[in-house]
Length: 541
Ligand code: MFK
Image 1 (cartoon, rainbow, N blue to C red):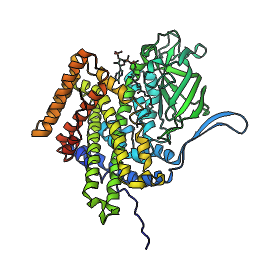
Image 2: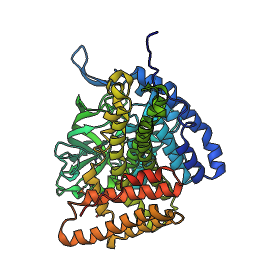
Image 3: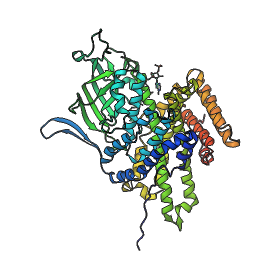
Image 4: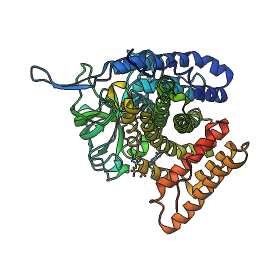
């Protein structure tokens, strides 16, 4: 008999995930858990079954842009991959965005939605990208108070009906900058020819149209129905304050792009199923969302939501890598025994599990706070904590995802490096997480911004960490306390010595990892010790 290696397989991704179970049991009231569990079980079944099989079968497909038809008409049609087409329907029907807005379970709805997204994400080739932006767009429009746009778009963004469901793009990046968005060159001109309701005696709010001209360099999921984007009304000053936030619908009633050209799709290292495009806006009609200035500030609710999704996706890709590696360890025999009986191999996987659990807990902690904010059940201090933890969580989990998926591939030996196992894509897709939605350094600087007056947010974070470890004895509690004390003293010294910016990443990673450890301690997780042994304090001077 020739040797035949059994591949790794997945079971129900909800039922097989004790971390998710025990967490939900702890944070959700029992009646809420009873009510939401059937849909989580169903999503877990799809994620480990049909969707996963489809993902493996779909491996070689990529989105295709056709710019011209046979008769010379510019059409700019993007053909999506089969899994993406299926994912859109599944996402809508299972309320992967809607759950957060239906708010059937008040502040717990955001946790419920993130649990769905966590299960859905690793089997759907980063369809989480348009969902994240759709969620962020709904939140941004609702925060803007712009009733016309809320009534027009939010029902579509938050529906469970696939035929009514719209996704949104988030067009910020231009050639001048993915990080320094204030440099954006797209300009906006009032469309005087098509002004509607400009009659000042009308009871309807004026909905003046604007026309956008510019080049958007990296627009994820260019197949969305709408987009939120930034442009500078002519005559406005430079910088982020001179930009305005605009809403636009990409296509007219006949399906034609509205003065938008799709120039090409990006040739990326990973997220290759995402139809990321370069666009030219050549008079694309758009409406202001919230005034003619402060576009960067006005789009930040969207950034907070997509950064939460980034963290949930990071935890989800780590969990998927570990689930496959653990299953494989039971099936792969080497040197006389299954890998699962090899202490060194299992010790390596335990390290990955510890990082994965830590990422899970900080991402879901931010989801809990986000849920409180969305239902106005948040104190001022908790708001500051949410504002600080969002960039800390995003930057910490994204880096963990790259490290964990890389190490997980090694756990398969050569098979982890071979494309048709479906494994290498985990690493390639994880690599985007520290880049989009703000790089590690940009978010580390954002965390400094979020410290608030007198570094109040740091004090709140310390208090929260103190509560989390209040019943934890000895060494682990000291690790948390010492790291936070070090971060605090470094902050004071670095301000005086002018080394704040150079040390911002180390400071942010220390706070992020320390909060992760405190959360693991609170859970009573056996991985806390292991996680601490990898170190949480990244500040070396
Ligand atoms: C898998 C799931 C992931 C989904 C991915 C979706 C696809 C991804 C496609 C993309 O990558 S879209 C592009 C994402 N781009 C970014 O995330 C931009 C990264 N750069 C930053 O975040 C910069 O920090 C920023 C552009 C915000 C800096 O711009 P400015 O103009 O220098 O901002 P400034 O002057 O510091 O802040 C303006 C105001 O906004 C200030 O408020 P005030 O006017 O009241 O002082 C800031 O406090 C506020 N602000 C800035 N960042 C904030 C914020 N408020 C809340 N939260 C924040 N994060």
